[in-house]
Length: 183
Image 1 (spheres, rainbow, N blue to C red):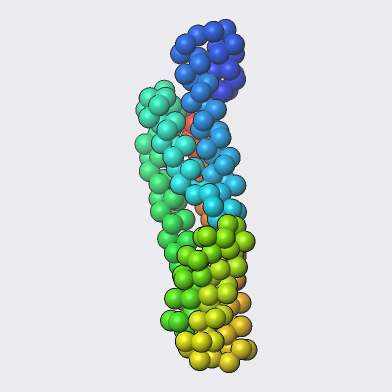
Image 2 (cartoon, rainbow, N blue to C red):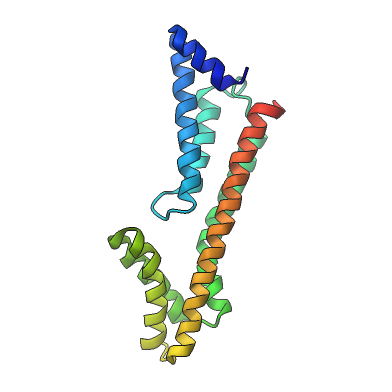
């Protein structure tokens, strides 16, 4: 019987330890699911929640009884670091690839910061508007060239989201395989 179901049935029987295990499992599953959703939604720290769920499980269940090897936990950490690196460089690389100047990249950062105050639409529109406006007003580019840089930011951002989704799936997949099948 899978450990989740065993913990649930023990919980129904009224054991204090079972309640503890059920609570841990519930929290970890919620962190993994919400973390995966966070790879799409900019307001949730997606891969950070997944990493937190893995660490919580490893340390709360006990390193021997968790079924998660330290090597698996380290690999999940490496995937997490790759997702952070991808976040930092994806929009900028996309903008640079499509001909953005340093002003366009500064505009993307400024637009992202200003966009924070306007919720999810601001987080999406802010960097795009920032690149375009900074390219027009500071880099003195024509509308066509500024638009090309803006497209690059969008393409880079979308590629970054796709990359984060793949890394998040890798983190969750490694966790599941390590806990249920390897150990």
